Length: 272
Image 1: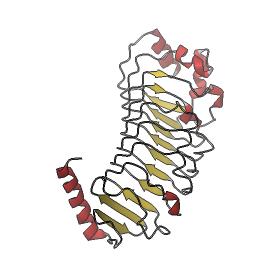
Image 2: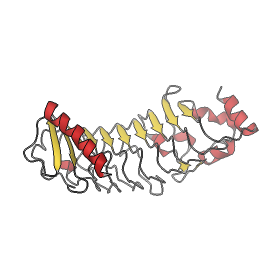
Image 3: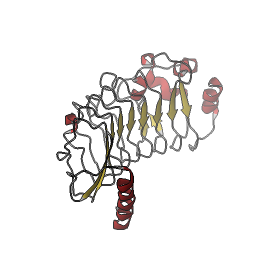
Image 4: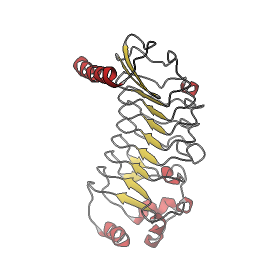
């Protein structure tokens, strides 16, 4: 982050701090901290503070917004914040999500990690987030999700409803997020997805029943050139009529470099 940009961010944050927030006496000297009710807002000189051990009011905070601070890792003491429901570590430099980092954060409902440097997701990295509803990983450097099993599982994320993965570097689509029992939307837009894969041995028979259009999958601005029945064989679909299993899902494929052919025509005709 350029020094000028950081100065602007701090200036805006300072105005907000002085007008509508209570400052914290324990705030590190290189940070601006804003305590507003049960919410903590903070930003620090990039790279100067990497932990939250200094926070005194761990037993009352519900929301933490730590942004624009060059944070390179997720603080390891989140489990000490007993009532946390919202965590926003956006616009930082986080590279990984350590396995078990969220153990003890069972009440977390919204996890916002957009605009970081995360490259991959490991098996069990979201374990413990049994109440999580929104997971925002947009604008990162993620190139694949499923080389390790167990990233998105019903047992670890039983209440997950919205997954945001737009503006990453994904090249293939793996359907495992579709197994989430309460899923409402997945945003895969603005990646490099050109094909489907099935490393997790997904079967069309695993799909839950839901009203038509109950789940929205956004594939806009990717690299799909063709969609045909052969792409679905790996999911147990042999004939085009079997695509009715996807009746509960709405897909947006706009702004892809499609080559219109008979195969796409068959798919489009079936979906009418």
